Length: 256
Image (cartoon, rainbow, N blue to C red; front, top):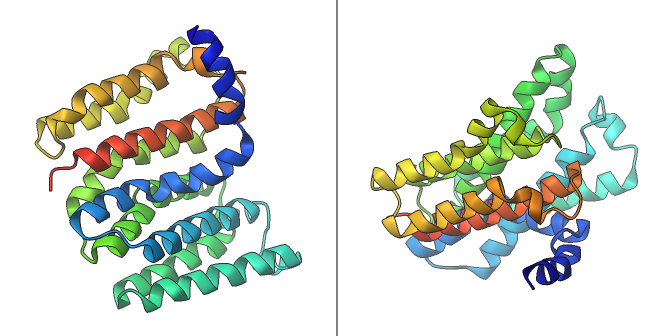
């Protein structure tokens, strides 16, 4: 019975098109949830920050193999992406503050300067990956939170750290079973151990405990039973679902 239900869900849950939509959502989901609780939900602001996250991710991925900005602009579709990114950035800038405007400029500098930085040394690729995870796990969530609440709190950054670690695993994806490597398995549990620590410190509501344990059980211990095929794409799609579920729990359980 359970196997039959799982087989019906898998084609939809692991469809690449769905992944292209929900992965950028995982960059801002926590910020939207928590910001809506602290402030008030704004459909326009939510749409703008989601479009910003999606275009940011598309440009980030599509520019990875270009050695220069000029090379990236050789394709008309890339010019269209950048124009859309500028328009959305300006729309956010007009609805926000000077601090956010400055961050938008830094984001653009990262997008179009990271390849040049990576070219200087081989180790720079690792640094850019870590910065990319920092964007996906913390910075974009902070932007989403600010768009909804118009304030900034340190508590959001603390709650985003488990997501940051999950994004690092996503970006440094692998297909080898994590149980074969004790250190890797321990690192894979780290986001959940940190989430439990936040509960103990009073930064998250105790009501989050069973949900955190349940998500850890599903996505760490039982992931091989959920995957239709154990390849890198499916691993990353499953990680996206994991990010969304954990974001949902963290967003609801953050103590205001």
